[in-house]
Structure formats: C-alpha cells, structure tokens
Image 1 (cartoon, rainbow, N blue to C red):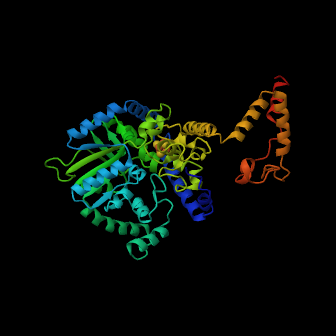
Image 2 (cartoon, rainbow, N blue to C red):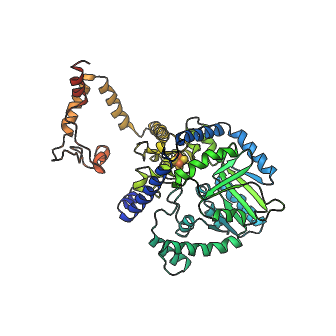
Image 3 (tube, protein in one colour):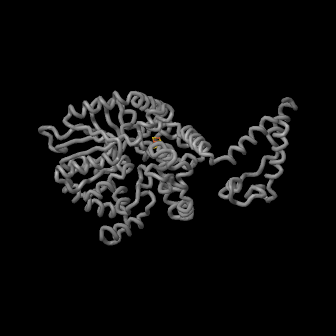
Length: 478
Ligand code: SF4
C-alpha cells in the first residue's frame, strides 16, 4: 500500500521554478484550448462531446463484438493480433519476437500504454536497446524518470535542465536554445531510426471495421517509427476501439483541441497491415498487441466503465487545481491528475493507493472540459465510498464512525442542532482584524481538525446565519 508522498509534495510546493513551470505550461494549454472550443470557433463543440461519449459508450457496451471484428480485419490485411492479459506478456512477446528476428534495437513513439506496463524496463532487462523518439519522451528517458504529464512528458524541465542533461548523457556542448536542442536530439534519433529493427507505437484509436490503428502526433517520429523498421508492433489497451473510420471525424476534432489547443494535430496516420505489394514503404510485419491489464475489471462495473472512455488528451490535468500545484510525479502511477486518480485505483486495486481518490477538491473543472464527458467527480466519490467501506470492514475508522453517529443524532434533534450551530459560530468567529480564520480555535495545526487550517485560511463568518436570514425573509415561518 502506498502512502501520501507528503515530503515530496512539500518539496514540489517549495520549488518556485517547478511551480512556475507547471503553472505556466498548463495555463498555456488551457488558454489554447479555450480559444479553439469557443462557440465562435466551434459552434457544435457540445454536440461533438455528446457524440464522442455516445460512441465510446456504444463501443464499450459491445466491446466483445468490436474486438472480434477488429481482429478479423487485421488478419484480412495481413497483420496479426496478440492478446495480452498483463504487461509482462507484452514484454515476453516482444522479447521473443526480437530473438526470432535477431533484432537488437527498438525505436518507440510515445505510448502511455507501454509506460503503464514499464515496457522499456522489461525489454532492457532482456538486453535490448529501446529508444524513445518523441522529443519529450526522449528527454525523460535520458533523465530516467517517468512522464510528468500525459501529453507533455518533460513539462517539469526547463531548457537549462535539458541543456545539462544533454551534456551529461550525450556528451555534447551545453546548448540552451530549444531549436538547437531539437537538432541535437534529431541527429541522435536519425541514426536510431535508420538502424532499428522494430518500431513500437501506441494507438490513439483502433478502428474495428477496417482493422486500422490511428496515431495522432505532432512530430515526424511517429511515421518513422511505424514505417522505417521492418517490423511494426502497436501496443494498445482494448478500450481504444471505435466502430468505424468515419467516427474519427468526431474524435479527431476533439482530441487535438482538448490536448494542445490545435484544431488538428500535425500528423494523423491510419495504418492497416504490413507493406502491400508495390508500396514503397511500410513494415514487412505488422502486429497489434491488445492489452487488458485490469480493463475488463472496469468493464464489468456499469457505472465505472466510463473511465475507459478516456482519450488521454490531458485537459483534465491542465484544469485541475491539485495537479497544477503538486505536478505529475507525486501521483503514484504513470497516469496523473484527475483521470489518474480515477483509473489508478481501479487498475491497480483500491487497496494499493487508498488516498488517491481523496486527492481532489471536487471542483468539477475536469468534468467540464473532458471531451468524452467522463463524470470524474462522481467516480471519485464512488471510489471514496469504496475506500471508506473497506476501512470500516477493517475496523480502522471507529472514531470516524462514532463522529458520524453523533452528527446524525444531532441532526435528528433540531433544537440541539440549532444550539450547536450557534455555539460553533461563536467559537469560529476570529478575533483577527480581517476576520479571516487562520486556525481552528483550541486545536494545534495538526490532527483532523487542525488540518483544515494548516494549509488554508477560512474566510470571515457571514454576519448572519442561514436560519436568521431565512427567518427574516419568511417573516418567522418555518
Ligand atoms: S479524462 Fe477526459 S479530459 Fe482527462 S485525459 Fe481523459 S479524455 Fe482527457
């Protein structure tokens, strides 16, 4: 069971450069998104969200059908589908394939699914060289850390950090101009593309009726990874399916806008099967690895199933006041932010990170911007309820239960409840000049009560209580 990484969180909060980096990057993504989803720019934005949600629902409610259809189509186009229950099976398949084909070097294009199963680490233990080829992923691979953000993996590093990293790991002269850093990375990666045996990609979408995988990227590396090596392996979760190619008209309009504020990302590739006779490029062999890794467990729950609608745009992270303070590395798993707080406990088991569903202010900003309309706050509340039930079963929250029983009893006795309210407001009235309450009276800044004011101040109490206002408005009637 993981504990809240309090020390690490404090370090993040106390680091002004990091705070500025998180705040400005997410802020930029937010304002870009806002411009391209405005009613003036995209009048049917809300209808598109409804359609995207309906399409995801339809697909996941009939996933068995679409999975089989997808496999039939992949086979018909000369490819092969590999079914994997867990991450280790994906690594075993790739390691076996590499041995059979005498492959030593794999190039990769960003894939959160392979991050989720720590594919690189598994393959490196098998003696294979694995190279990330998105600039951000390349940087975090050199820094040996996990992505900080779903769409901006190196969001936490400044150009000066990158300059130091390149000098240390690549042995180049210190270069702080981003365009030149890009050139350095490109020179290293070009060699890798030319000599790689296997290209590994993720997939933003899997199209059931044509057996195609769709990748959406902003750098040319995606196409190099999937067409230059003689073998292409796409690794994707089973929830990435969509029924038809025409459904892309809905999802592509939403994905780029929600992720980076672009009407459309630069490269959209639709790939089905290996190179055909007469074609000038493309791989000789084409595999799609379909990964479960806990997804069917979510599928079995009709309410929580909607967590699988996620198209990994990252908009909920950018708009989350918690993510914007604590950043991506304080979440226990590769998926951070609101969607991470929802799917990590479900993929890994609620007992693994029981504190995670509570790491939210429930402000609802995530649900408001989610292009597939996942009700993240509702899911967080459901997960909280599960944690509390599990704790109660274990007998760990006797004090809490007692407090709630007392509270329920008080609420059933209106006069006593009223009296308690009056006493409470007297105690909470701050003697401070500005009337802000900086500490709950009679408590140290620790413990369940003190925690309320250890990180925040409470605004002044209103001069009149709700009861007094109600009485005045209704002339004393109940
Ligand atoms: S939950 Fe919604 S907003 Fe968050 S990453 Fe997924 S699709 Fe985007």
